[in-house]
Length: 214
Ligand SMILES: N[C@@H](CCC(=O)N[C@@H](CS)C(=O)NCC(=O)O)C(=O)O
Image (cartoon, rainbow, N blue to C red; front, side, top):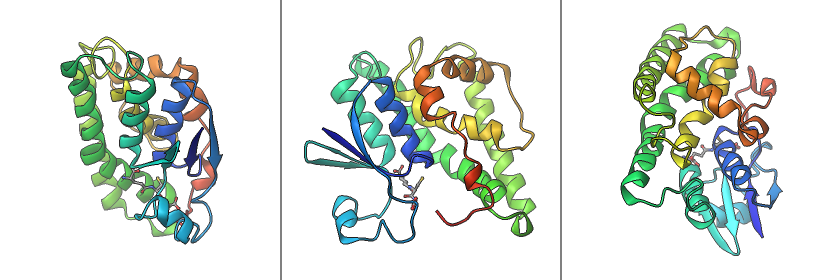
């Protein structure tokens, strides 16, 4: 049986929830990360010495880092569903996952934390504008790629779509006016039609507003 550790309103946990749902995998859930100090217990540190969620345990094997977990689930349970069979196509999915982790996520988190999670009185408008402008550049690049591709790795939905698209619901719904380029929006609409996306990503997150504690 698969066990997933991590509160369901965490951005990184949501990537994993989406992959699990796409693959109709049954799992048990441990709601940690919402209470102060609960990732610092000896029990949790045995699972992830970095004290971060998500963590997935599959028959005793411990996997952490959200994109690694999405890759693992895709390889183990998602051949031709999330895991492209051809190594070249797989590299197309992989590069967008790496891009999300190294490039998009730091700027999106800068925006989400700077604008949404910081109490209004403490917001730094210069930092918010910088993060927003970088996010708009990143999404403009995606828009250009999506002009000729229905999904990030090509014609079919794959694991490559999951990390980058996890940010979109919050990006559009956090109450900030942002650019909405046409091809990016068409991709977002294709993903929004997926039940797994609706169930795991398009979920209310107002409890995070103005809250810097986890
Ligand atoms: N690079 C890691 C980042 C993990 C991370 O920072 N997770 C956050 C939640 S999104 C966390 O554990 N925060 C502490 C908490 O929720 O208590 C990954 O992708 O898994």
